[in-house]
Length: 215
Ligand code: DC
Image (cartoon, rainbow, N blue to C red):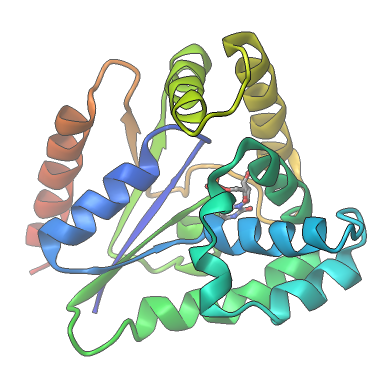
């Protein structure tokens, strides 16, 4: 089973890349951010406390596949709340097995898996065959994310998106548990000046080269 780990900053393009690469290689795909977003969405729906790690872990443990299909998970509010619940050790532990099982057993139809998130190459799949770390300048990521949020009908300025993105980067990179950082053997992909087609082509070429070397 080939495992590809894609980590990176918020709005770096890693999700779009992961989906396209999975379709191209015939691999299963898991957006692990959805697990944290779905946990946060459940807590917000119950007016619960995002700062309470023990209670947040109970929500994480009780997640169902349907919870991951909630279209509201894409919102900025839920993304920010997801970043807050993801700092808790208990929440990360609750979601660990699901992610590892997915990487190992995605289903008979697949020859490989792609997981994207923040700690895939460092914690969830440290033995992944290929590790990518995707990043882009904050201003470019904020521009992309702003366009996306406006297309969902959210009323938010570019400046607000940029400020929230910097806050999110800071929290994701500086938390004690599984902070966002490139794995020692990750290949860095900077998408600042790359459109999605060029980023896909760069990632595909890199993955093929690494996998060929392993044969
Ligand atoms: O990738 P995303 O924006 O949907 O992720 C939302 C938040 O979830 C992110 O800010 C941090 C957290 N997250 C994490 O801690 N580990 C992951 N593997 C994926 C997401």
